[in-house]
Image (cartoon, rainbow, N blue to C red; front, side):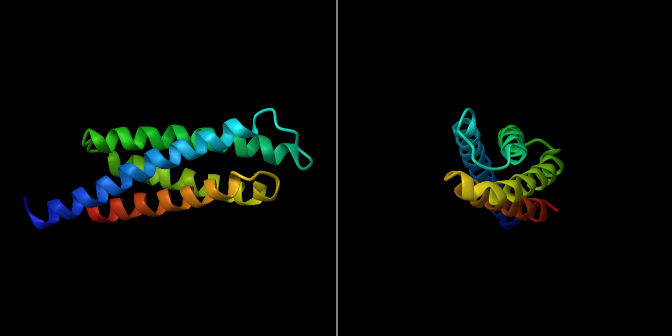
Length: 123
């Protein structure tokens, strides 16, 4: 196995793990918010739930595509990184009202970073 292939495999494996971890965190965060009493901005909470669910979906899909070696993984990971960033931004805003939003934002930022590293490694 070539050195480039080893690097690519390492980046893929880290990114796959980050995508699945992010999906789990986002699912937990959004599920915990559903039906919770909210003493703040209802619109922000609804947006947070929606983005967490969308982020979880794209993270699972990206992890699956990378796992099967799809030639389109890099494109999907670019979208995944963008959605992770959007989710993180909203979770950061909602974190004062929900204990799981801070850790969710951190996991989303980590996933976005690793997706972008994977894209650069694959290029």
